[in-house]
Length: 85
Image (cartoon, rainbow, N blue to C red):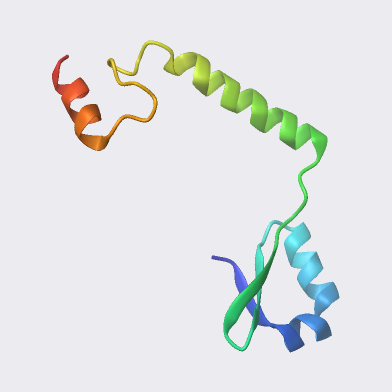
């Protein structure tokens, strides 16, 4: 879940929280106990490209391994498709 801080604490410790976000932590800021903001590190173009390449590779390896299930299938349909093979 990461770090959870109140709005006042976030204001007074912004630099410290930004250091933690930059290091990979996520920070949720609350107001009166209710989450109102979420801080996460910005992905660089290289990271985005690497993630997209990974997603594309997963999609390529999944082709033909769906056991007859169609996109949007229900759980029951997926179970039935799995039992056929």
